[in-house]
Structures are given as C-alpha cells and as structure tokens.
Image (cartoon, rainbow, N blue to C red; front, side, top):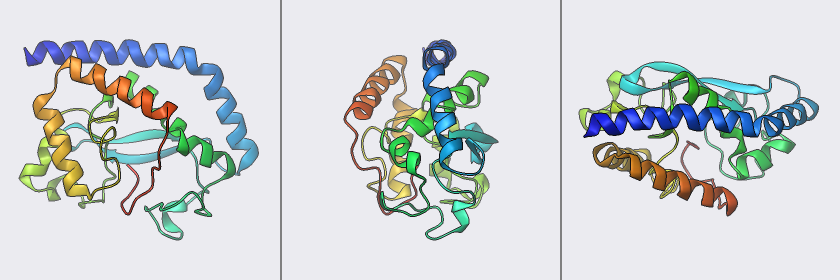
Length: 203
C-alpha cells in the first residue's frame, strides 16, 4: 500500500508544481522585478541542502536578504523582522512564505516534494549526512518538502532534534491523505501568518 501512496504522491507533486508554476507565473515575475529593484544581487538564493538519503541538491528560494548574509551578523539565525540583513521586499516575502515559491521548480524536477521534512543545510545541525545519529536518518527516507508536519505544527519553536522526531513521525505515518491535509493546513497558515522567528535556524 505504501508504494501506491508514494506513486500517488509523485503524481500529485508533478501536477501540483506544474499547475502552481503556471498559475503563479505573474506573481513570480512581479516578485523577481521587485527584488532586482530593491537590492543588488541575484533574484534567487541557491543553497546546498541534504535531500533523500542524504543526497546533496540545490534548493531555490527568492532572495530575501543581502548577498552573503550567512556570513554576516547572526549567520544562519534570523531572530526578528528587524534583522538589518533582510531587504525591504524580503520582509513581506518571509512573512507570507512567498520566498519558498521557487521550490515548485525543485518539486517538478524531482529533488523535492510538496510535502516532506524540510531539507537542512549540509553543515547544520550536523556536519554532513553521515554525522546524523541512526535514529535521525529516518527523516531522510523521503524527499524533503516545501511544507510538512513540522512546518504546520512547531515550525521553529523547538530545537532541531525535536523537529527531527516530528519529521520521523511523518515518514512513518505517511499516506497521500496526510499530505493533502498538510497542504490545506499550510494554505491556512499562509492566509493567517504567525511569527516565523525563534531561537533556531529558519527552516
């Protein structure tokens, strides 16, 4: 039954990402123009992340911070809206999670899914896939997602190990109906956004 759910998940990912890209194309173009007007640098922020089975891939996001922000100030941590590294349009993009929209292309090409554990950077919270404890590697059994169980529940309010435990719950309980439920919960959170800042790295 699980393999059927995985097949349906991929079908939903392809159709969902393609439809999303087409429908949202005017918004994607407008955001791209606003970023170029607002700040010098590329429109997209590309970063190496750990995907399924620890395979490294490049995630796409709209750039919301100044170039080289990871090596300035608090580094990976963003604790508040007033972080001086965030560009003007970036505050709006982050508040409504619009900076995540380019990940629809990640989903379409197959290195991400609409729903799944968020892909961590290659060097945090552990330095590389092989440094993760055995119990924590369960979260890498499925493709990383734009949203997921952790994103719709605790988000950044708990430490990474607790987030990994919740990711493991998703992997073990996965079915296509759970994915659909989490997509609707995500849409509701976008409509009624709450604070995305905590003590840990954002996503």
